Length: 250
Ligand SMILES: [Zn+2]
Image (cartoon, rainbow, N blue to C red):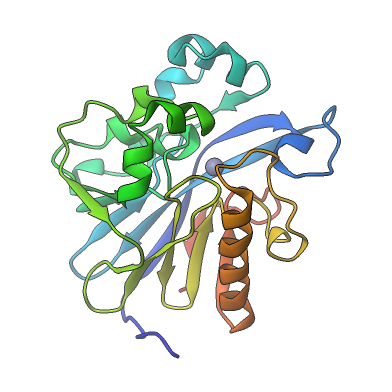
């Protein structure tokens, strides 16, 4: 099956922070005593009528002392955050038409509060519900301070969705890393987000040691691998070798 070929869709990658953490935490089999710095990407997707932000990066207010900001010293005892420029420093957020979240982890939802409340949020329903379920919040290290209590319009998706109704931009339900994790396809480009942190993860399945459901994550990785093997470009979530800022071919 060929997808519709969008015209005039532009994708730009922003780097909206980085986090340093033990190598073995985010890639099974790597040493825990080695520290790796992972870039945090967000994407601006522009069509003739839409200007869509995909993920929002780190919360600038949390950078100096995230353990205190989030009141979660356990998470940030092993992770440190850095940010040169937030989404607000790099974009005119008032001109956005939608914000899409791949999932609710702090490196993806942290900047949401910087986006004007008039901009609707697109997320999978099961992710949003997990973000408001005490047990799922605990299991997934969600930090509700970044997303709870907003007056923003919600567009809750139930599985794969043709977002604009013209085949140009498709959200793919790719659960496992978190309960309602989603990826995004634009033309021949697939933003895989955290289905795999590294490009090699599609083949070697060396996922982070934590996940909502490792089996589902494996299925999602196989789904993205099939897309890659069919000729599409699948972009991983946090691969330090691959994620540089700038335009991305669709
Ligand atoms: Zn992430």
